[in-house]
Image (cartoon, rainbow, N blue to C red; front, side, top):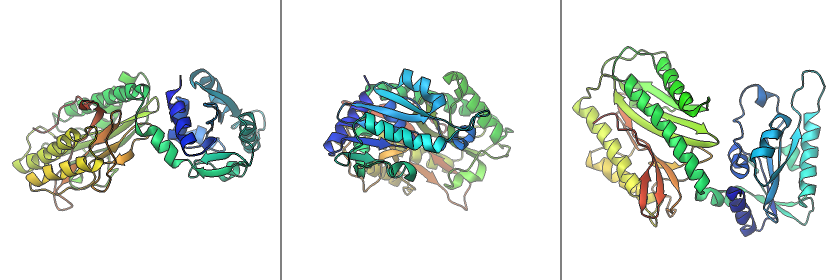
Length: 381
């Protein structure tokens, strides 16, 4: 059973759509249950256009239009979907990927009975290329709202994958803690060791992004801002905001340390303010509360330390690293069980300072309140 496809079809019907044409990495991943590669490198350069997931809301099924090399995996692991492959570059035979791509879309629409001007299709306008959109005869509406609603509450499968992602984040943050015990390490080498430990735990390489900053660069938010070819010194700040993607689902966590472990009283004030704000915002993520309640709780925690709120308090997370709702004072979305957040308030001395702290953990909202998925310890106590 593909629960994510079923939720998507339910929301499409509510929006008055007979189906959808989706082209973003996150939405194709979401509806198919197969991790679509992030477009980078040779495969991206030789692929004429994004994968497409063509969904029939009438029958809760779909067709994936994807590079031929990915077709076997999709046929095995994408429940509810058939596959139409299009060629990429071939070393020995000339191919026409563009023609096959648009013909494949036409074939998919016809097979699903969505090739009529009487049909209504939700189209991901920001991601479906013009050459594909021109082949859609149906009346079009924007797919953004129904897909946002489908993804709002995570399925049991998604929660399990986010738990695994959170565990990989713990590996990375615990490795950073070990590397910060002594000075004299290169930021790039530290990043490599952190990546190595995560890859070993995952059993494969996975996409990692974010930042590792040490020294005065931690005093401002210039994301992304490292790693760099810099050697740590005793007393340096070390802040790592690390995001990674495993089987299509992301982790996003941050911790702050002092190299050598001897923070000043002022550094402790900033770090404790960030930690208290994170914990206050996490505690506010209860069913029936609002996203703005978490933001306001973080701001109140900062005020107790005499510090301002530097940026938003966090965001939901899933098949994309930064999802709605975000924890800001103006978002009054109601918190519900099954939502998963990365909560990340920070405090920074600014360009004339030498220190800043950000504290971020992953949280699952349950019927009884927030469950903190991250298990790593704060770096400054």
